[in-house]
Amino acid sequence: MYAVIMAGGKGTRIKSLEPNLPKPMIKICDKPVLEHQIDSLKNSGITDIVLVIGYLGDKIKDYFKDGKEFGVNITYINEEEPLGTAGSLYYLKDRKDDDFILVFGDVLFDVDFERFIKFHQNNKAYITLLVHPNSHPFDSDVLIVDNKKVMNILSKNEPRNYYFMNLVNSGIYCINKKVLDYFKEPKKLDLEKDIISHYMSEKLVYAYRSTEYVKDMGTPERMNQVTEDFKKGLVNKKNLKLKQKCIFVDRDGTLNDANDYVRKLEDFKLYPGIEDSIKKINESGYLVICITNQPVISRGECSRNMVEKMHLKLGMLLGEKGAYLDDLAYCPHHPDKGFVGEIESLKIECDCRKPRTGMIDKMVRMYNIDVNESWFVGDMTVDIKTGKNAKLKTILVETGFGGSDKKFLDKPDYKAKDFSEAVNIILEGRK
Ligand SMILES: [Zn+2]
Image 1 (cartoon, rainbow, N blue to C red):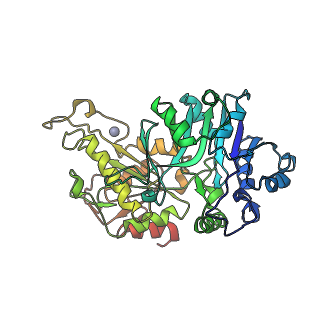
Image 2 (image 1 turned 90 degrees about the horizontal axis):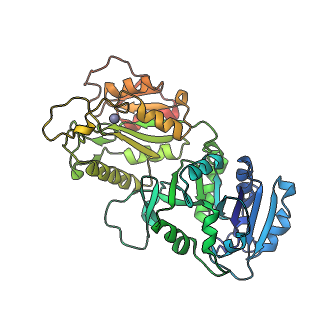
């Protein structure tokens, strides 16, 4: 396995900061971004690195040389004239490796590549994109993903007056060598428009969802942001090789106002201040994942499609304020039969319906979550029971049912007025 880093870009948007440096050589805490990238790759055992250089490429070569000093082996592809974001991949045609990693030189990341590559290989993908929600979905291209496959890319330049998923391409790829057959000659090609679109239409492009830190530093503002995050330790802490801390949160009655259950899209409204609280979690290093029972689906009161639309709306409402959920899981099942219009196949004893822990267990595996350092926040005793069952610390909020369902007798570790106070208790240790 080798990695290709596209380090030839001009970086016009960030040039004001360092006019005589190529963008990947700009330093974040005394180290060029490119060196941070190489460190992260090396930590996943990837030491065979190909640097595609162009603009001011000599500065990169002078610094890294053959890579020995950095514990890796570096070879160079020198673009005499710019070949776009993919054209130079032509020069990799002779390589024997089945797959390779491709990253862009203006992205600060720390990623467990072994986990990423395993996903790519298990799915026999041609191209896998590392994807995540971000804090600015409205000025990002977003992805339509269906069952792990990338179906479409919606451009930020096209009007999007509908609910879409806050899921964006991070700029990190795993690519199978078969893709190199596409390259017939060294010419200018665009990775997204030419290559990804082509394989997307053949349903060979996959999305790997990760909560790891991957952010581009291509503008002075973003540069400041990633520098701050790096200083706070957020970049390294979120690597999925390390145990993660998570706040699991119930939906109805905790995040959004709900009389029992929400059935219509227009009825889905967040409580005041929820966006700010979620944003606070996003900036804290904790993950935040919503876990909700939606028996309305099995009872035939609300289609699965409608529930998913509500979750898109939830993502949009948060996105408008720069906040996002790291993930969300819902249980569509219900054990009791006998409702008019119910969906027979969903009327089962599943292992995901709270207070069972199936949804949490899956997230714990996906994101390497340490349950001892994680929480469940909800408005019903069933949420507290779920938290206890999953060995999480628990907070009961007074909104929604405020515990009045009284189905279970388990006592929460803390009580809070609302979700915002619960988040303060967790992040600031307030009792
Ligand atoms: Zn279920």
